[in-house]
Structures are given as structure tokens and as C-alpha cells.
Amino acid sequence: MMDPAGGGMDWMKIISAIALGAMIIYLIPRAKGIMEASAQAEKDWKGVLIPLAAVVLFVIFLVAMVRQ
Image 1 (cartoon, rainbow, N blue to C red):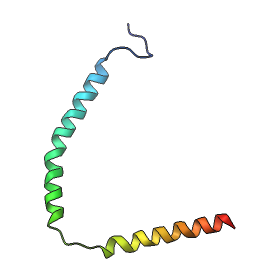
Image 2 (cartoon, helix red, strand yellow):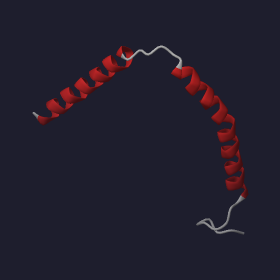
Image 3 (cartoon, one colour):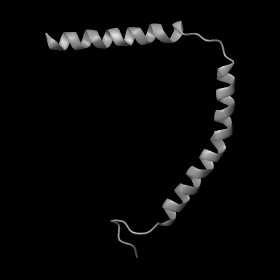
Image 4 (cartoon, rainbow, N blue to C red):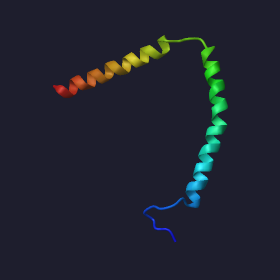
């Protein structure tokens, strides 16, 4: 019987490690495909910058309200 504070690898840790390895092996080819597809996609920087600027301005507003 192993002590609960630590020690060796039990079956749950081994199964978790195998599942994590399988997930990584499964996802790497799909991530490469997604990266290639995104490189060919239309660039829409306004769609990113406008909401990002709105969030930054909102945070600045909140900080200013707290300081008063």
C-alpha cells in the first residue's frame, strides 16, 4: 500500500500520461492544418483592433473611476 503523500506512479497517473500523449499526437497534425489554413485566410485587422481598443478604453475608464 502506497502512502497518499506521494511516492511512485500509480495506475491513474500512468493512464493520464498515456491519454495526454495520445491527445498531443492526435492534435499536432490538426494544428498544423489550421495554421496553414489561417495563413491563407483574409486579414481582418479592424475586426481585432476595434474590440481590443474598446476593452483597453473600458479598463482605463474603470481604473479612473476607482482612483476618484
